[in-house]
Image (cartoon, rainbow, N blue to C red; front, top):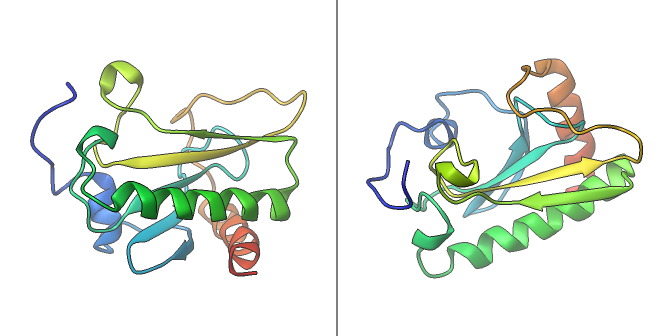
Length: 145
């Protein structure tokens, strides 16, 4: 998909916001939501989305959307560090299918990394929902600190 086009109201993240698809919620505020990636590349791989924006990518973000997202990304990154004690954390955001974007709703990935542990392929496997809920609880406790 190109960098331009119409927003799909039935994309997976829009459906998560509407409560049509279950999620392992870490935290949310009036504008953003952080939850576990169901197809993680590492333990603790999380996502941050805006709940009301219809931006498919960063280029389309309405005024104030990027700021709200980055604030939540920063808080989530700190919470992951406190909860899981990784050696590093990758924060990434894709724009367009050629860049690797597969869900066309603006979102950020926050991916903890540990020395000597290879990064998995995204969507290679579905995580155990019970484990995701447990990680969401651990990270969420630090998010609220």
